[in-house]
Length: 317
Image (cartoon, rainbow, N blue to C red; front, top):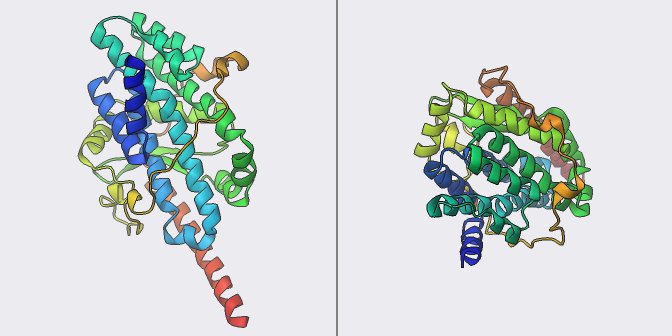
């Protein structure tokens, strides 16, 4: 009965980016000791903004419809996979608290790694929040490695494509942590194909998210600003002209996913590296507003050039 309940709840909340983001945040509100859930809500929220970006003018001008659809499916699949793995963990923790006994043996029903099962038992005994946070970051970045990062359709069509390589090289993507005072904090994402780099970025974002005087600002934003997947969520507080984008569900229907044939335990084939546990110090607490919007202006400029060239070519024809 418990396994069926967890499966039903996971399917219900994994319908789309909005339901995932809300599920993470609602769980964190109930169990703030599970800090990864708050981190996941912000990373998921950023994925929604990236998805709606694909329907805005610069991307429409710069990328073909097929490329934009492929990028959307990449964002969606990564976040779907992580939720499919992580949400049963969260529900089993909740049930363990309610029943006052560890139930993490149930994780085997959800193809969860032996690595994270052991870490949940460890946390239940010693309550070391930071270790569990890092363990969950390590686990979730490893579970997408085979079905997404190394999977041939994604690897050939997306990760080797010129638009992705350019984004990766120029650090166009950033995980943003907005505030209601208009300041944007976060980290630019580069070398995305490296699991070690993704883990490092995850830890940096987490340590920034829980930085003592910034954490209340991020929590207030999460509680007060409705999740709709558009950048207007935070751009309403900025001085610059907002990016014209509609809510995510105006563009995308719920996407059907299939659990691929990869259901193995990554921890049996991958050695957990010592550096994955290393703390990432918060070295720069400056907002990203200026740097982030400079990159977006450059992208807008490039798309305008491409649009002009295309228009001239049509006129000549």
